[in-house]
Length: 100
Image 1 (cartoon, rainbow, N blue to C red):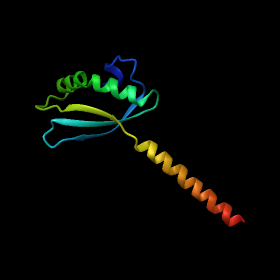
Image 2 (cartoon, rainbow, N blue to C red):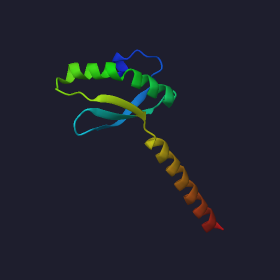
Image 3 (cartoon, rainbow, N blue to C red):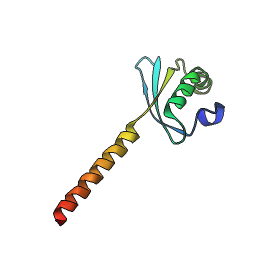
Image 4 (spheres, helix red, strand yellow):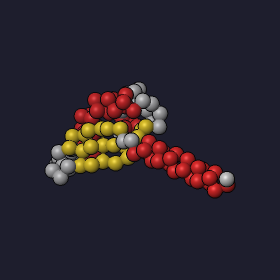
């Protein structure tokens, strides 16, 4: 729906990474990552379009309660890349020490 229904040029190529729904289905935290574009700009645009997206979900899901959507930029992939870099540096340092 985001790719096909939203026409906001501020929204780049995003991926929904996960959704956390409250037990009463009143709210849903939607984590996303960005391939192209500024995460902050995308977050603002998605949160502005949250009501529109909720309405589309309501029409398509045919369920009694559709949660209010709250979008946030998920930094998990950034943290994973940082950890990968640290591990690679540690391995390189260890192999360098072993060579000496």
